[in-house]
View 1 (tube, one colour):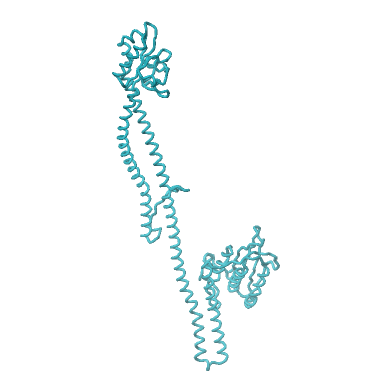
View 2 (cartoon, rainbow, N blue to C red):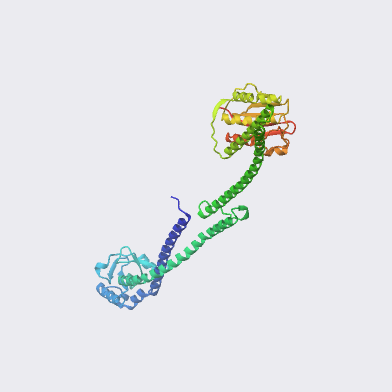
Length: 492
């Protein structure tokens, strides 16, 4: 499951806040406890030593354990926060002030006592708690001598069980107050962080909104507005959104320009086509009206000639309308492709036979090179025939009497066949070559043969070859002829 940027930030923030709050609480509590223990131990650092010196029983050495126990009991009544123990040099507890059932240890480690007495370690120093097998507490200690012999140690626990119980009750009350204060601090901190987070998130969104508003006011023309450039961040949804908007603006602007250009081209084409349609239509209408009005007074020869002219203009009109519909059909992208394998030579000879009468009328020699080729190609035979018919019709129209037209087949190494239609006619000027495939474009030296030409043949040819995934190329020299060539896939 993909986690959004906001969810990531929120999750990280919550985890960081919980970890920080817990660490701070634990650290502050530990610091407070350590500081309190150090202060209390420093405050009572001479307590055991003074008790040992001021009490005759301890000063002269221990010889009466019951008396020592009574002494500890009296001292405990005077100082209920202390627990008194007399410990042998080995660590065994000899006497104490507590009730016997509450003492869990029979022996304590004397090393901390020695460190305390000799001041070898920094305070606080912790010693074993006789009332708890798993706990240590701060203490005060002093050695007890009988003459020069060490009898043991006076071991005073600071903050005994009674003190812990009372302190726990007081601490619970203080803890409640601290919890309220902490909760207020948490809410305040979270509110400030939330404000910063919202600002962080809304600032780029404001920029994006401003971009969208400016783009809209500019009429969706990207060139009239300066869009925000967004960094390439794959895991930042705002930046991704900004990049997507910029790409969308580019695409909208491109399509907008294309629509304007296409609309302009269509208007120009409709204007030109209206003129081209009007000429044969006017001629057709004129001759038909003449026949209708003067039919009885016309001679049979005139009647036949007028009918032939009207029929010729009707055919030209039909051809032009067919080309317009064909080009519109190709532009609409609703053309189906029927690919199949077939012998190329058979199609070429059929097309040559189709144009034989037209070429012979101008005494043009129509050649296929090589005359015998056994190549199998894989393409749409109907569309290929239409392409070759357009190219041959164009070549015959621009080739003078007695000229030559050659359909040349060249085998290539990459499983393709190069097919070229070459003539030695009028040629095309080098500056006009980039425009000859535009609809309605006619070269400046185009041949006028008293027929209406829509200028759509080469445009249709290029679109048909594009459907066959092939590009058409042209080479021409003015006065020397023209060659159109394209590639076809060989059959597997």
